[in-house]
Length: 81
Image 1 (tube, rainbow, N blue to C red):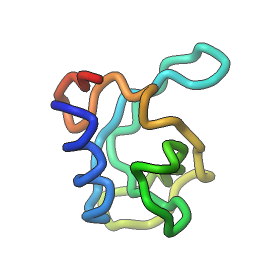
Image 2: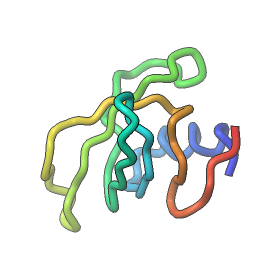
Image 3: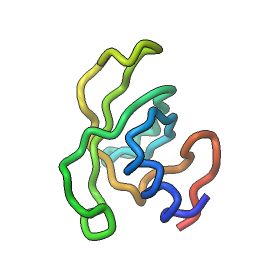
Image 4: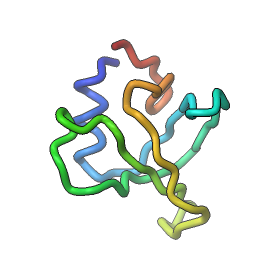
């Protein structure tokens, strides 16, 4: 999966699963999350935020900021830069 496909999936506002490399070097997996970042052009601003949700769509944790270039897997597929 290419980064452009990740952009399109994030703009669709549907739940997704993601494996991230965080700023402190920690690798974190979110089984189900939704994009909750600001309303800006994703291709100009590469920072986003996600909110983990449960199976009913309820928030279960706080928002987590991340860079789209630090996504290792998106919906089970490896992300290629």
